[in-house]
Structures are given as structure tokens and as C-alpha cells.
Length: 149
Image 1 (tube, one colour):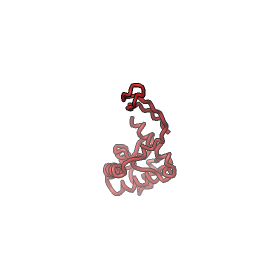
Image 2: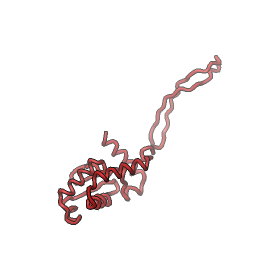
Image 3: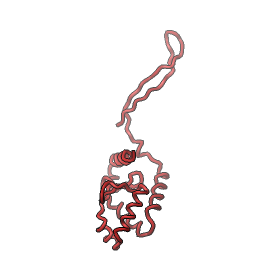
Image 4: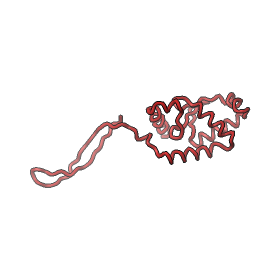
């Protein structure tokens, strides 16, 4: 719940003088803060597609990014051991995986938290574990926006 405070002016009839006057009115109320997750699907999908276009330069890149996103946890985090992951992905080189992750960060598909830990952009991708509870999605979107500022 978010506290909303408004100041506006209303026209009211002064009973004693019979004149319509502008009166300052202050209001405060709580409202459910759902505005963050109400996003334009078409715009989000196109942003996601452009991020994938920038990130994935080959069909192998698509396989790797799909595998990374598939392994995200309920906080949309991806923990990756680059050496092990490169071996698991048909013996790709570490450099190939590192470059893929760099492009994913540049396109804002992922954000690097620390060595081997990334978070998927919750405006583009939501893990199955996170999707079970809408509050997690809103929290992740707020965190993503807060970290950008």
C-alpha cells in the first residue's frame, strides 16, 4: 500500500456571501501500488526481442541464454559457474559464455550482481518460481528500477 497525498482546488459556494470560491483541499489516502506491473505487453515484448537480437548472435547463443533463463530462481537470479556451464553447453569456450553474458548485460536482459550471479530483467522475463506469487514480480520490478537510479 502506498500513501498518496494530493493538494487540489475545488470550487465551493460560500453560504454567507453567495460567491463561488476556490478552496484548497488536501487529501491523503492509501492505494494498492499495482502501477508498476501494469506494463504495455507489446512494448515489453518488442524490448525483449531487441535485447535477444543484440545478445544472441547464433543458434548456440539462443540455446545458452534459454538454458540460463530456465535456471533462474524465485528471485529471478541466475547463478552460473562459467567453466562448468561452458562444458555443459557442448564444450563451448569460457570466452563464448563470457561474451554472451556481457551482451546480455549491455542489452539489459540481465544485470550483473556479482561474479557468477546475474538477475534477469523482470520487465522482460519472469521465472516460473517467481510467477507463482505476483508480489515477487512487483518487488523485483521495483528493485530493478531502484538500482538503475
